Image 1 (spheres, rainbow, N blue to C red):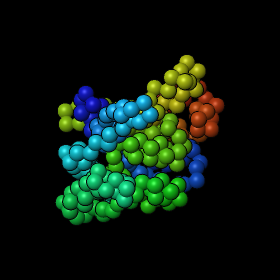
Image 2 (cartoon, rainbow, N blue to C red):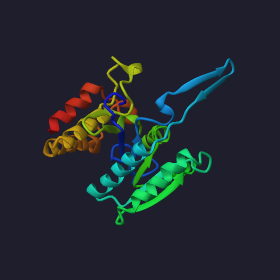
Image 3 (tube, rainbow, N blue to C red):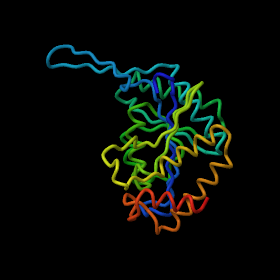
Image 4 (cartoon, rainbow, N blue to C red):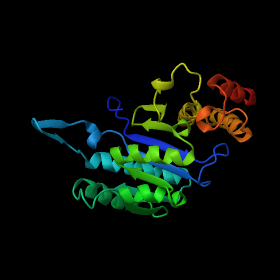
Length: 247
């Protein structure tokens, strides 16, 4: 992500018919800034008992992730963008992120803009997730909240993502490579497949992506061939074959 300056981590979470959760109307896209914040990894050992970890927030990175969220809202007919921060404590760093958010929001008068403190968002997401549309936030908050949101739809096996920069793009399942279950035949490939669909859409192959999405949806709707993480007993290969059969 840092090498290719893939600054926009986009993580869409939407409920599906296969997994029964507490909520049936989750449809949230998280825009997570990918290159700075505490994840910049700038740390200093002050003495044997003290470490300083430096939170880095720059105007350039704030502007481009926030603008990406609003541009997505326009192109995908979304209605609202919520800025998530902790500006009540980090008044300079998160305060700048919030202020830039409202400055840019003026360029998008048709998109509702609001802001919330991150701990409040964590509570609201598990009580009223339907109130959220697009969330734009810094690196650390985006990482934590996207995992929380995945739990609302059935787990990390259902959460795809894209990492977009000016010149390059990379697509991956949010859960990563999951080495702890490698070779057991129980991995859920849905997030990986949906990430591939996001790649296809990014390069203009929307028709191909739509076919794959439809095949996955049909398998999820049927519910008879699901991997263990979403309540089934099928192996990864059995699940894949069921999807292929619908293509």
